[in-house]
Length: 357
Image (cartoon, rainbow, N blue to C red; front, side, top):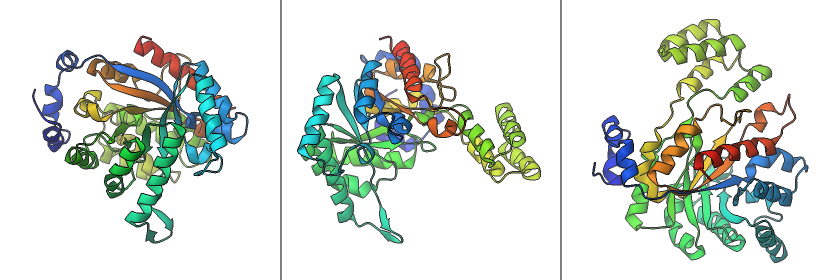
């Protein structure tokens, strides 16, 4: 089926379009995939925060499991951010060489409000963006992850700066948003308007979630914000396909905890995006945030069917980094000793198997 990206976006999630893009048609014109394994150092946040692991320890651990492409949170991990010394930047580059790693993606946090009730101006936003583009360039990064809330006018005006510092800006597509949303359409319009290679899309694997995140649910039960009876009822009825309105009405009568009613909305928002819907954006994607909450002993992510997602990306010929991002530590640290290294290791065992390398 011949369709431009713009035409596809104008259908925004049209089922007929998705159906027309069969697996065979995707594979036949896909080209060879090049999906590289990486890790966001956010995955080791608990160990880094408690000083159980230094930054170099995090890099060494990533290297030991073959996660060569590094994603960094500079505000957390770079001393004297945003102006580290030349000596420290030299040390960073020495670590990259020592462990045979690649400075892949710099995570940028674009503040929009610093004083309550006063939005930052466009010029102030530009100053913040250039600050990060400059540091990313100093450290050898060629990609930057932009949070989904980053103002589009800042990124559009910042395109000449991105080119100057040779840093691609990837806008995060984070659940409940999808690649078929109006926001993503606006990003693509900017890309095509400027015909730029310095602006793109960075999907988070949360858009592929197909069942509730049980570690977070259980944490909320322990914290007293959810009741076990209500969560069990909601999840069972959701699996049966019971209408949301009917479930919400029943939960309103049985709710005993403050979060029971909102859990209905949370569960009913879960709908795995078809990976084939990302194909029209393939040229705009250079990194995936391979989020996960719980790697089981069977080397599977409990809530995200990576066994369906990654082969689909391979078949479509994506050329990007899969950056593991472990977020489960916050849900278990009240009752278990967090082993972030083991969770990330399991994720890479799974990815290596699915990638066939």
